[in-house]
Image: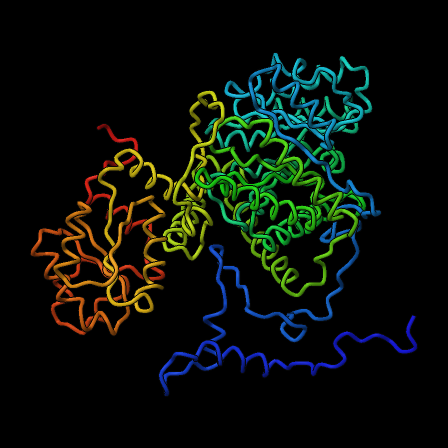
Length: 627
């Protein structure tokens, strides 16, 4: 104890908004010429982020910028459940550590399932499909599992009802049907979205009735938003589709005589979590608020309106190249899911894009969660992000926009009609197109793929996945695929995949642009021998010795003005077909630059399109094209 209170910041003057703005302008105007300085309004506009969903992220949040500074934050565990469906009591395991199993090898999957439960997992999720676990093998995969102690969940891309029947039979055989928890994983609209088939609401009603009667602690419905996230839907649409789907189920089941409160008790949401930490936290919080509003207008008691969320790391963010970075993505997503209040979290193994997970990758996926829960104690705190001006702003924006989007779907006639008439697919395609621009110019970077790529990519040793059925609905895609396709083209014909870097002047002149350019070329895995300094003739000799037909000049504007045009002319005279410049042609100060220099490499460019063009010039075939 001390005689006077300890004030850690007491010796520092509290900075004002004006102080912060002055520092911002100092940084942004550091290299701008006199008379061309940015105003604070221009600076703030540059620092403001607009997401692909047109959500606004300000550069600074304070109580003064909070649009509702006197907001009532509410409390965890009470309606509208923004701050959590239940009140966390400080227990380490505040969420289910859920492991996904989809390996058709029954002995392997059974051993893996038992190992998961013995080493920290509290829940199992089985995918039942022709390319995963067979419905007839579910009982064998779960042999030795006590269903009254571990929640069990199933899902299927092809036959949800067969998967549900297999799990129901296992529960019945255990003699503990009234005590089991988990999910039968049925969502006929999610199935329709994936397959393009008409939803079978009648069979779904029967399974909900069965679950209510036989498995009172389990849930029949799992509103699957992963299918939309995998296809490329944005944050707003994922929320809107989730609510629209759940409302469609609610409406149908109420007409069948199943009350709204029973439907709420039979429904959970399977939702994506990703490496956008704050957006993920806000998305989980917003979904609970929206579902509570549906419960309110449906006459559900306030205490029963909570949305149970089964969070899964987004398959769309998983990369094939530099897969080890997926461990970091999974860690961030787990943190966000835990802070956001998910009831269950599943981390996809880092080698998911390569093939079937190994014992090691499964262990790493499991231990990411155990570290978060047991060493970082994330589950002991209820809604730690609550009250953050940034998180509350994101939550508000997401909830408001998603509710408006949900109303648009309702005006169309509901989620089933919106799926059938192609409205959902069109909306997702528009988001994918907008995101593709951000991915290509690296405003939305992918570490290890589009930024800081691994120069010597090594394949992982995994068992290949069985061939999956062809689905007629929404098609899954990963954000990194456009860049991975470039690598595939280079790997298929590596002898041609070479771009020479002619670095002019001294290292202090070309160093920054050499590093930038080499990283751009490495995105496609292009070999890039280089020269440093030298006369035009010496540079030509080195280019010729390397056997390169494409050259990039790297240096500063000052050196370009003195040397670039002479070097370009010498290269062209020697037969080099393509000469590019790191920076802008105008830096050469020559009127001939536009006709002599074939292209530019600069920050903010369409990297994917640029590299595809380079590979075309080098004569590398498209990935998958016949040779």
